[in-house]
Image (cartoon, rainbow, N blue to C red; front, side, top):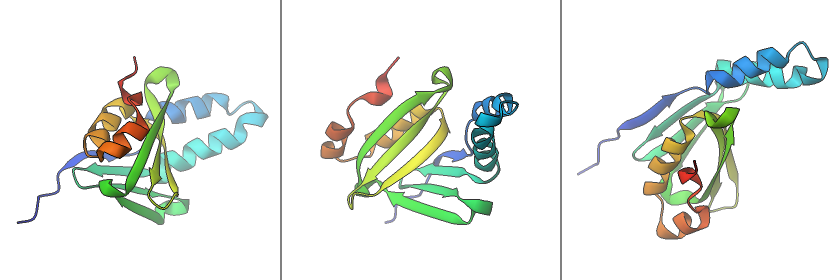
Length: 132
């Protein structure tokens, strides 16, 4: 019997990332950050279910990656925007990394993902999602 796939989170990056990018736009040196925020807001989408993590991004949203939890060996989070959102890096068995930028509710999502990891991956990840 197959386990039904239930969506825990589906959506794009935190809107605060775009707001900060727009506020930095007048400074020419920060223009690449502003463009990056616009591209993420337009085409980056996350889908986190009880069975896998999907990331759609790239130019025009043409790149798609799906990862099952058993392939993840480590998860690291970094708070951004005064802790309202954060970046998450998933390290996979083959050594490659998937970067998830401007993830809303990243602490809750870290906890959700961490529950589905192997014990070895949990130890490698630590309890970073439990901070403040």
